[in-house]
Length: 311
Image (cartoon, rainbow, N blue to C red):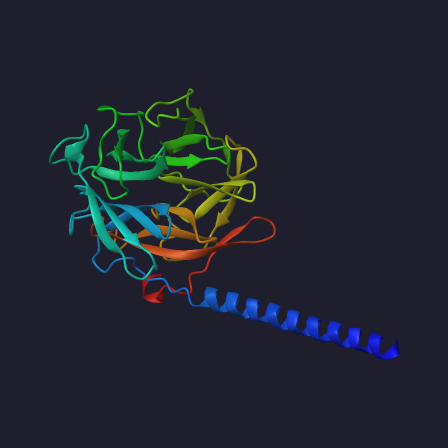
């Protein structure tokens, strides 16, 4: 009996030791996996990439961006939108172009301002800005297009739209300048399903009074952002309380770092744009950084993979 108890004890110790060894190995592999994720910054080598918004499709991330060409001109000259794709955050392939010729803006238009992309019912909807006037919607059967005008007319009478789909699969559009508005979309994605409502932002810390918002949700908290600044709420319609910056430098601490927050393979990322020299022209580059959330729901970007020369 004594030898039997000793045998059982030894087996237990051995099993526990193997479990601890296996658990340690899992933790080591997880740490290694996270530490070996390398991000390329800026996303592409040629300048002129702006206003990025991301669509995650399986193992791929598609980034939909504006296209700046007005070198040496102190104005936004943007003749189209571009679509890039990656599977590793190292190489971004240009896989498509969306032209204003294919929507109500018309051929030769150079006012292709910011937009957002969403997948719904097996189709892809691109919400775009016509300068600072209106926003419309285009549709395609593949992420890279071709995209065609879904309505032939503006969807809302303001610009820089973002699309958010809540946990219950209900889609919303958020848009505006100075004051953001939100409205539920019909399942068709090309009509509003309610009168737009103003989003109240309680500015206890600085929050830009500019365009191009982004809205996402993490652990039950809604995050409304503009550039590197953000505000949070437990209610989609607000009010939102400002929380400060996700990080300093790299254009984040201005009102012009239009961007997006997204999740890919269980990790969160922030992608945004930065002017090369806004005093000279409106040419931009796009950057990406991992995002973390603390126990209080506060966000921060890990900017360690971006060369300080871009700060």
